[in-house]
Image (tube, rainbow, N blue to C red; front, side, top):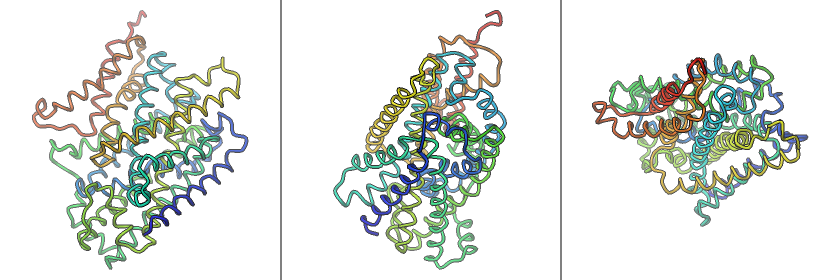
Length: 484
């Protein structure tokens, strides 16, 4: 598959998103950008959130991770569902009751300004790194299979990708993204099923025969029973529960889409059906991963040093041209789906939480819009810088790196929300900042020495829980007496 054809697909798809952006940006205001005027149909949001939840990480990294980890990721996915039920029944009612634009304004009402700014700052750090990871994954593929052949450096590829997202989300933000997400989910799922069909056809197997091969192979191993293993099934499940609560329910990016629904009931329906659909879809991605490794063994495809590159290597080099086209469309759809909403959420949080753009004192709408646009540019520039830095240090599968970072940056957010929802205590707000700094630092030290201190036990994604618990304990220590 020629680099020119891949580039043409990329630009054509981008043009399609620009058309959607143009149609949805008429009469757009800050309210349109931040919460879509609360007019989004719940079923549209639910369908679009499938693509946003999966992202380029799922599309590339999860199939690639099967070679080392088998189907163990499926245990995390099962945990996700129970986490989503917590979001539906506890967090969404709080957000709608408070009528928030940024979910972190809850901290201000519950604790005070320092807690509010701390929670929002950790989100900005978490989502900036997470979004950069996701974008880097796609940019690295575009670089390896397209732009490298033209002698274009990676940083130029990154500038092009981010600039395109910046332009089509610039005016209407989340109002545009709700619609582009539906388009991107459709293309991503179509790419998944078409790719699976083409590989199956190349192997001359029907679905039943392929299933027998997959489940008879070592790749289908799901439950790792060694309690010392980082992917021990019980801690995978518990981690999945809390990862979904934190990275969806306590994440402005994902919740911003829910807050565009007309009311709480519709938002809860959206979240339920989205969470239910993610179980079979993630399973099919893992099934595809096992199929890719079986195909590689059968045909003699060398496994790339980065397992994330196995899917594109097979799609571009060992299958009919339609496979490469399908893969590219699915990858671009997945990438745009997570990247555009992340940029919008970061702009929203920084504008609302840090700059207080919605403060009643700020009545000049033109000035508000100008501020929000400047923030949007700043977010894009920051992501670009991190992507370039990440290109020099990336070694592991991106899905593992993403969750590792999330364990340290989302932990304080988990602790703050948990303390606010599970207790009735107020706290000494001026002491919050040392607590939310110390908790991740102590977690990092515990993780580093865990095999020595805990008799060979190695922390995995559950470091998030340790971090959140330490934050909770710290907040308990600075709670106010009843007389205060």
